[in-house]
Image: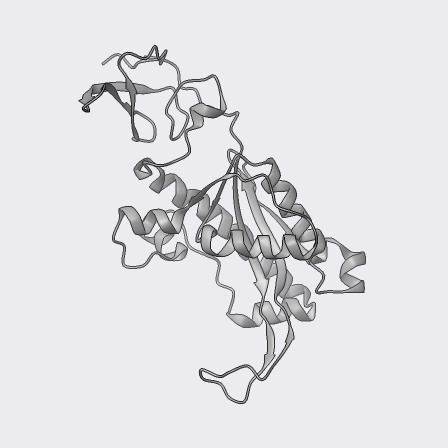
Length: 260
């Protein structure tokens, strides 16, 4: 049996964005048309964690006191930090990231003249949950609870967001705690769903190391062959994450094999 190893050269970024709402005038409370739009939404903070890091991080408006004092709604430095992180990442992971977080981020990037990031591979755990499973709910909090890996931090509702917009220190502390837990929960849910992701970015393309293309482990075991009309494939199963992979029998693939 080979010793456990991992493909660590790939840079996988887990991230989440928290925004302030738009500010508009309406005549009523239910399904109203906007009379006048006073202020656009902006980012309150981003939370993130690199794969294999022990601690998650939060970059918020209050981390830049000079800019915050001048304009508490100026999210340039927060957007710039996320821009730098995404430019460094090979793969980004978020829950509803393709529809929400990535497009929200792009909206602030173009607003601040930061330009497009070098496009990373994207893993959206919401799409994964919808594609491969039939959970009662695909919300991150429900998935974490169902899979037994944790729950979101209770924020007390919109008042925490409102408190942050007012500059309330207690609200900001709760927001930072909430944002960190969101990313930690995202990592745990991702790791549970990952073996089912047949289109997961191939980690072997980012390194000379040839292991499990899904998690990077070297602990692969031969599990028969699979034939198509044009080729014969060797099937492998990762003994760490459980994911299946394959390689052409004719290919010279040097993979460590677990001896039964």
